[in-house]
Length: 283
Image 1 (cartoon, rainbow, N blue to C red):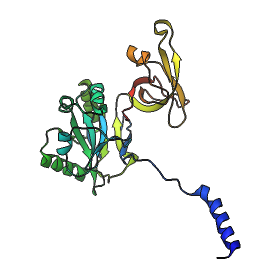
Image 2: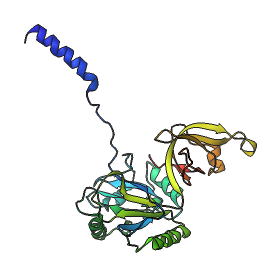
Image 3: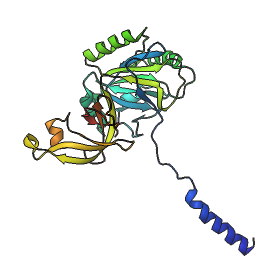
Image 4: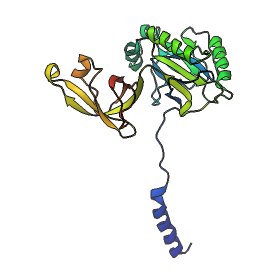
């Protein structure tokens, strides 16, 4: 190769190098994420289920992982009972038991007595062909064949109209549940934020990153009074309610992602009546 030509190739490589695609280190498993249902939605195209207040867990046939891709340290006896095929679901103890569940699941050394209370509620079969209605029938068969009482197929049901949907929502919430999930019965398996799956709750919820702590006043002097947060789309606002005294004394660190509830949006697009719910289970 002539020296001039070699120099030309070297210069060309230097020019193109900055535009080479970066190698991604993201090991997060792909998952379907829910949109928000309108209160007046027609439920007839959907299969409806209870929304469980648990920890999302994706089973790849070898390990349980969070949405962030981190391995959940489940006991060997729990893992051994799961089928050797991908599953998507929620680790759950019961209504109103999220903090207890989160404490158990976060441990790097699992405690058997805690895990014997945990159920793995299955609501999807990743990468399986067909409609969701067809996958639901497969889910029931997979769970039945596993013969593991802590592996549960989430019950999916039909509702005839919006009035029935609202009655069911009131029933679930009145019993201490979070709300309902609506999954298009005709939907293929998809991932990412998609309207094939919607959540319906009395309150909306969303996530934001803590960017500041605002000192408290009065009875909260010496503690955190409010959190300054930023949503993924860049909206910044304060959250000053929903905190226990323990959280005010030891608030989520800057950079922590939290979940908050709210009732609609202001004319400026900010959440109305935002209230702290918890640190996002993203460990």
